[in-house]
Amino acid sequence: QQQQQQQQQHMQQHMQQHMPMPQVHDGIHVGTLNFGLIVYDLETTHDAERGNYAEKGIHECSQDEQIEWKSRSQIIEFAAVDVLTGESICVRSRPEFNWEDVKSHAARLFAEDHGHADIIQDQTLPYFREV
Image 1: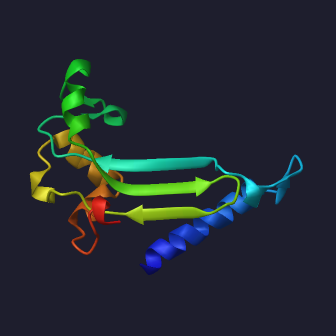
Image 2: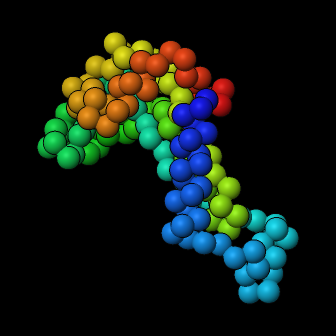
């Protein structure tokens, strides 16, 4: 929980430093708008038998077969910021499968290289549907 709050604060500070948002834009008070402009990023992982890790040149399946691992992907990290207000969120969640279920060599290597293995194995994290 504390780590999530620190990540949110860091993201908000970063956005305020690099993208300062005026309280009034073109004569319209930002708080009176009926919409926002949200930028988001997702990190996912999967338990399909085959996958790809393009950076390492590992292609266990063809382009046509990629739908299999993509359809088995689950969100493990979600970050978003409202560009107009600076409000942000960053959450981590574990997938609904265990590390042992990650069969693809490409998926395992990618997860290890990008810190996703730790997220997958962290049983204290909620599932994404619970966040």
